[in-house]
Image (cartoon, rainbow, N blue to C red; front, side, top):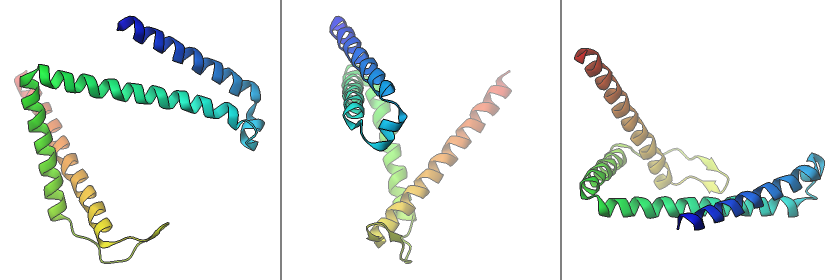
Length: 145
């Protein structure tokens, strides 16, 4: 499997280099004017394929590791549960804004406003947790010396 991955990575790398050389040889003016869309699109597709492969492998190996390492699975579930608890608390605490906000697609609804507020509150909660844990870790490290 390792040889196959190396071959696929080499082929995608060569394709990327070929498309990059074609784009560079076309020049900036051709790209800006839109004449070279046929040159840029294949490069974007190569990037999409690479992104898809990387995401697929990351998800596969994370799931594989979760099921082979049961202690890690327990810790992961605790972390996911804590994150979901923060999101639920943020949603309950935040309130929707009654003002109407203009968006490109119309006016924001109360539900959209509530979700944005919940996202901000969740961010603030996680920021506070991170700051407290960094301070606690630093103080613990200083006191242990």
